[in-house]
Length: 95
Length: 456
View 1 (cartoon, rainbow over the protein chains, first blue to last red):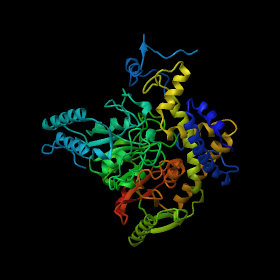
View 2: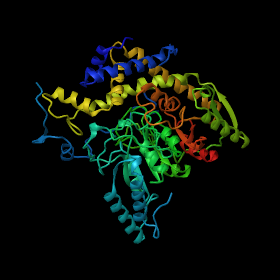
View 3: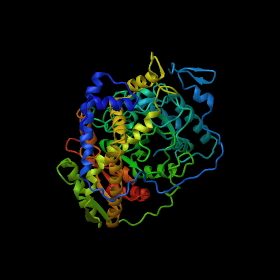
View 4: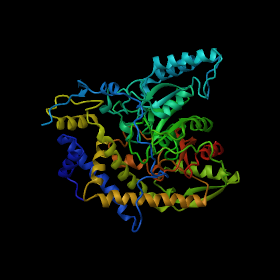
């Protein structure tokens, strides 16, 4: 797997981060080493093995479809944002 | 642990703890000291004691929480710039349970930002220093909590363990550190790192304290769909006969003094009549690679919520919404957060998913099976926690792979969901703590803690 500055820029894009040129350069080196290390896994034979995504022994924990009181209310949550107007969060223009 | 009573008041216990916390300021243990709040709670408990009312099992006991546990006292920062200014309106279930028994939170402890790291050097607020040598790391990611207990500031502290973040700093600072069975303690109200491996646990000075905390903190929580129905108190403590040691870990990649400490402990156990069996666990050497695929994938997903819009830090002067996201995330995350997010998005991206993420998920199956097989041959496993004792500050921080290798022996437990208890067993020639890790099958937490007394 070839890791270069272009790969890093693509991954930064997928990750919604704008990186400086200096950061792009250092991350290229780091990620090259990390990807090289995790590629070690190629040596392990996993033919015919089912994947495991979680180690919780239970499945389908159901709850009734009803609205329960929440730990935090709307006012408390809106108080956490930088700018609020008329009970809405203000952000820069979208387009 | 010392609880409050009529002669030794909660106020005295809390004042002493706060004083010690200030005395050890240079260790950079606390992100926030809850002075006012803690003293107010202490006074309430003292009043109840004076009135002869019933108080909880942890009445007046000062404790610290890792700064990724949510509570309304002080900002919850996870030692990350991007959460700066975030004061939680809610409290983590685990903290709620401890407080309901009268424990008093005196401060929030430092960690690697978002718990990404093995030394607490990735904190936005600077590293925490080792309790035994100020030139060495505290370990991580729960470094602040480990040092707070090691320096006897608090009776116990909470931690989170996604790949060794409780056990490794516990062993670096000579205290007990438990990563419980996955799902034993509710994850509700703790900043998520990797949801399928995150475990909430504790640092204590004795196995007895650990048992008490587990009896309080475990149990099903409707707010965490992956919390297990209570098993802790009901689990039978079976007679331990056979202890396994992992052959694959007995090589030059592990520090000689740690190998000798393990040998000495197994010799002691043999003398006490236990049978020591050697285990072949050849898949474990792939656990670290699998871990650094699965965990970053979950990290990338869990950290996507930090966008500067709803809470925490927001980058200024962004001309549109997209640049607000990008600038906030660039300025708000530490380099290690960025590495993990990007690796996560790499292993999940089209074209690489099968080769990396799916492959790692299959490796995880083999690791789970390898533990199941091992526990047919022995009751518990005794291994090093990490290949080295506390290393020097700055030694590995610029080399991500060297830092990841510190997690070599701890991550497989998280992938398998089995419990592990770091137990202090001695010191190196230069006086640094050495810890070993006791590993048991799922839900054997109580027996594991009980058996730790045999290693004293």
